[in-house]
Length: 573
Image (tube, rainbow, N blue to C red; front, side, top):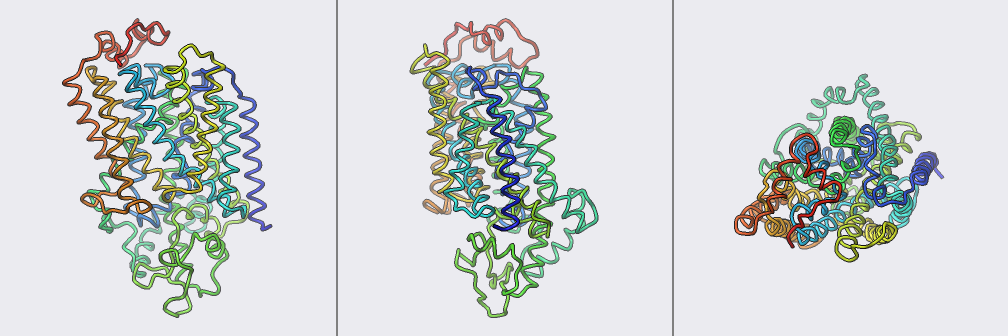
């Protein structure tokens, strides 16, 4: 066993033991604790949990690689702008009002605000979005185990499934929240330590957010010399021109504001005021990683270019051979590596003689080795990547579980169910969801960041419009909301299947990629909801009054009635 594997086992073993202990200490027996942690999580802890839940494997593993390799610099900023901007949008525009409305799940808000039929459409949307999202997380788990512990992807995903099953099923939202706060600590330390070390080594500046600015001119020049477009130049790839950058950024932004597993986090806060402070803490915690990702991308890309184009094919560094052994560095179109032009090197260039394809998901995981850092740092990064993937996976699985158990079983099938029965159904649903998530992790429809971006597009097209209209337009109707959700979701999902290479691989409409179509789907949803609402029965006067009141501070009589379960104004079917 190599030194890297030993240190990976040490850090992964310690972190997993911590997660299991927290889950056992936080085990629950009530639905309030299982679904929303009893609504009693302190704001800083909740902020850390929100950050860990939201910063998935895509943020930790894939984002820097997307910036450096897949999108070659400038175009990768769509992920930075979309994901961070969307969180601000969620925190200011939706979260406080949803918290004041006071329901356990997003479908429960839809059911109370609109109708029971709309609730079922919302449940379907939650399940589709969450399973697409969780596929990326479990794929990230498999990637880490494959590289650092020498097991195949299937075994790695199974191990991740077992850990998530234990702490999610035992502790529900309460266990998940406290576990995610610990996972945030692990992932942010694992991300920042190598970034600080490499920045200090290369520039003498320990703050990578500042240090990487000193190398951008060198990186631009080196890329041009090797046939790539400059790292900082805008709109160099025809596939990601101004139109598609706008569409992808908007899909990620509005999708962030409509993600079910992030929205439910604000129900775990003690109050509306605490929900606002949780959002502030989360933005701070998220910013630590997102402001560092461009630096990690830049430093690692520079190291890769220096290494690949100044080293003979037979004497490449160990990190190159290790990642090539697990087929994450290959020749063009996945072929074995080969010195095609006979110059004695594996050329990594932007022109016709390129002989190397680097999977962008390896960039962060390989960055400590590429930067020459010691084995303990490599093991720490592996543990951080697993923390990022598992934290989001657990949140997604809980959302699926709560939507089925609370919004289908309790609300529709068995309204007289006891808390014990609800918890049993919720845990069984979660177990089934984990099995499906495992399958998707073993057979993902794309690389980690791409799969996650698809989930954001689906969330933008299904939930964002009916949440905004449900809060700010009191005359949005039940039939309008249901029609809008169905139209946006079906249109967006169909377009994704039509254009993804793993399915039909079409060029699509006007060159719009699958990752950007969510913006168009959102506009379809808005249009359908507004038009249908003009010709269908309006909400009751009481509901319209409640919608007005949740937008203002304080707890009025109507809000109190709603929160205390004394609401006698049944929504339409």
